Image (cartoon, rainbow, N blue to C red; front, top):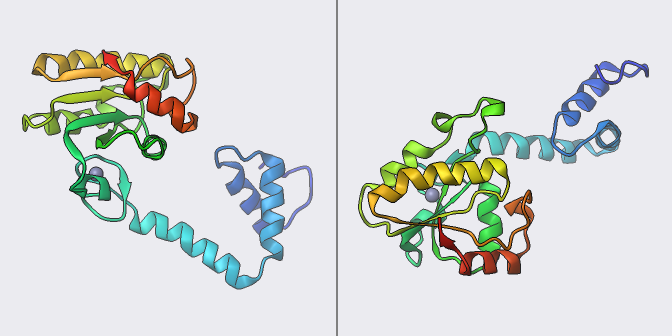
Length: 203
Ligand SMILES: [Zn+2]
């Protein structure tokens, strides 16, 4: 337990440990959040606990694009104004938010839920690649835009997909190099993303 050095009530150290497991939250922040909750009115804490459970109970994956959603198909797959000849392939749901903020893309998406990473034991079968290939069978998709992150795993995954998809006679493009190598799509600003989309090149 991370709070061994200080004698703390068990429910408190338990909550500190839970917060500590979250991304971007170190021990100090975990403690601060916990003591904030101790002082919080009961109704507010209740509401927070319910919001956490609602995310687990009501959020599902879109059966088409694999994005997280509360309705299936999701709002984007259902959207009548979307260009159904294009699919932009991203690593995580947050990447869709970033690309939508750029307002320069009107096609559909596909979320892989990760990247190929032999070091972490993640192979192609662990990703939503089968589901992507199934979508391409219909013949209505003319272009697949590979928008995995510009780092080693992202590039390797894009290359793997390019080799699978190009033989199907579908145009395969990759976001332009404007994105800093090693960076994360999720944190790129709208202008950079819009430019990377516009300047996309054959993969
Ligand atoms: Zn969808």
